[in-house]
Image 1 (cartoon, one colour):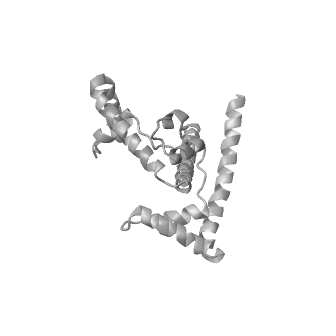
Image 2 (spheres, one colour):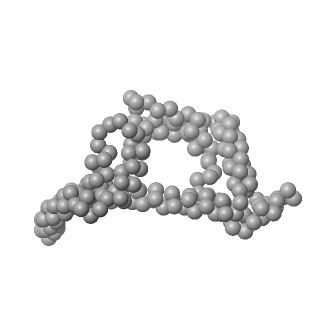
Image 3 (cartoon, rainbow, N blue to C red):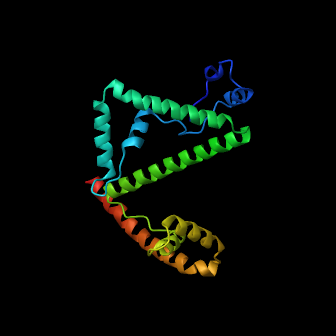
Length: 202
């Protein structure tokens, strides 16, 4: 998210709504796109035989080798894109603007949480730490997503909605299994921590 400075609306054509948004001093996170991001968007092509990370590295190298004149094309596309996004945003009501800003903040927080969870998993893997067992809910979702057919996103939505309607008796199969895994994990993690402590003391 970036602050809207008063300079942005200093021109004579600035409408009252623009001034109102200026006072809020907020745009949705991710609304703007940089020249480099525009270049990636225009040139990234999925290739089943090449990892996405490798494709990104290749595009990054090519971007660095481009001349200023070659990059200007994407600077112009970026400016046009950003200006249109700003104009479209300013046409919305204050309530709609606030909703978009809040949704963008929530998505940013969710992304940060996923990144932190990934970092924790990677750290545990490096340490050789036993994997935390799934919850009853996670076991249910895994069962519902198994197999093919329906789009994964649709199956996920259906599974989440179904879980909320289940009674405790209907969830018992999953809660019992989750408890069994949790008990086994407790024994394993205590053993692992004891061995780790012993190694550290040597």
